[in-house]
Amino acid sequence: MDKVLIRQLRIDTVIGVYEWEKSIHQSLLLDLDMAWDIKPAAATDDYQFALCYETVSKRLTQLITEQPIELIETVAERVADCLLQEFKVTWVKVIVMKPGAVATAASVGVQIERSR
Image (tube, rainbow, N blue to C red):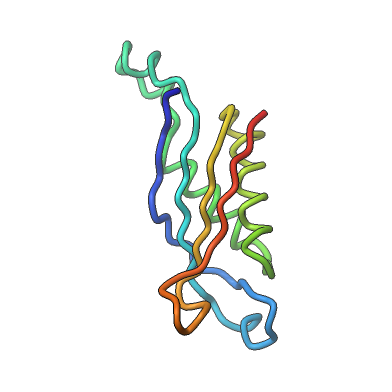
């Protein structure tokens, strides 16, 4: 299976369940593995057959920042759904990390895999 990867996509947004979190921006880091047949793009060297990293990154930033979200689990599901529905990837692994959420851990997070 071919994959397109995005690592540590940083998105600053309102995220959290505590009242103090609802008035500040915090960073999330996303790692994405997206199933994508790269053969047509590689064979033709034609951008129209590629999954554009920048377009995906901008859309996910918009998705995550358009309204406050309480749970990183919700972020992961919304990201996976967007990639499957809007970008037509057939399989995706999404890791959402929230650095600094626990004082004694560098980061906490969730990982999901979804397919259509």
